[in-house]
Length: 164
Image 1 (tube, one colour):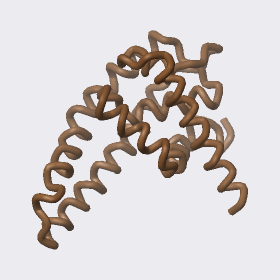
Image 2 (cartoon, helix red, strand yellow; image 1 turned 120 degrees about the vertical axis):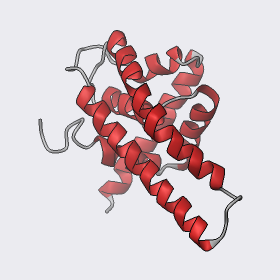
Image 3 (cartoon, one colour; image 1 turned 60 degrees about the vertical axis):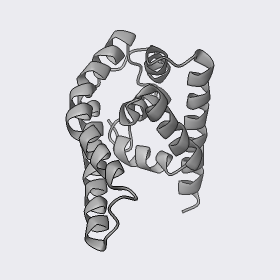
Image 4 (cartoon, one colour; image 1 turned 90 degrees about the vertical axis):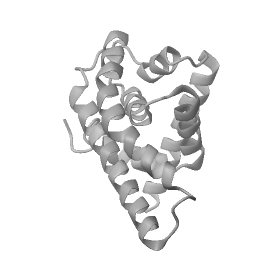
């Protein structure tokens, strides 16, 4: 695998794409409305983009495997951070909230690394992100809307890195 090949750059590519405001909004809306695991969705979307096809049954296995880390580590950190927002505003409390935010981000980074390690070898089938979104209750049109938003964010990220 080359240095820039999928999945080696999964975390930096996810961070770059997520800087796109439309993609970030779409991800948070899906997380709130459908309990979407955003790091998982972005890994699957990157895999699709790279042509790293994943069988539907393997996507379902990844979803089940991701749940324990998300529910045990990420969700409690997110709940603590969100619960503190606007309630605990003293400087030391705000600093603690920022520390929790950093831990939440690191937990998501570890989540991505775990997901990438769990990816099965590629197959010809592409559409893992759409399968995940459909299995989570999104309509085909809503799933397609997210995929288009993701593609636009990636294209913008590539264009901006070409100009750096």
